[in-house]
Length: 99
Image 1: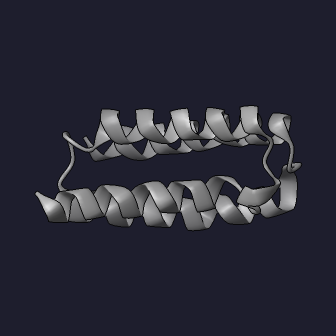
Image 2 (image 1 turned 90 degrees about the vertical axis):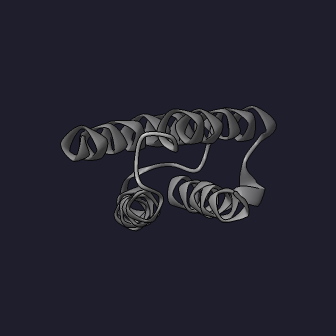
């Protein structure tokens, strides 16, 4: 059980790093939106996929998505919103292919 919790915490941390470049620069509403997205993602996904593969998948997605973020998105609430939408789409495609 504690190992599962650690995997979830690590994946949540990777998701946040994949979505924002500078967490401290986020305004309150954008930060709350990001927290909600991460919690929803973890709740929706962690029961349906084997833990090790799930963690690796999230890590790969976040590395790829961070490259996209650094070249395309602005660091403001609208940038975070568009980035969350893009990573949701990417994650959806990833898990759609995995199931």
